[in-house]
Length: 134
Image (cartoon, rainbow, N blue to C red):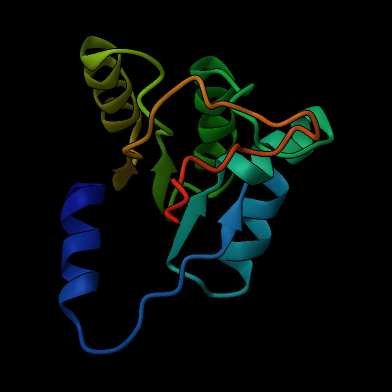
């Protein structure tokens, strides 16, 4: 049974499915050793681990895919939901991201619907795009 099939079967069971965040081989092994069947490869955690700071769209697909490879090799039995961010570019990049994670053994991929690059404030935080009425 493929990882996506295994995840679908798990999601069909009653109850919650908890997916702790993982970002490297050690976090994956600890998650598996704690008895979890699933995990979320977190872009935010990968950014914190690799860059020592917040996730500001600086992590590349290559770095995320490298993190996925570490996680999958360290705990191959874990069903991993991989963070595909915004697909790392245009529609063709999204296809490439999904295909690569799928071929590497991801159980599912999260793709965010967002505009990139993000507008950031001077403090390095995402700018609010809400309009004021008044």
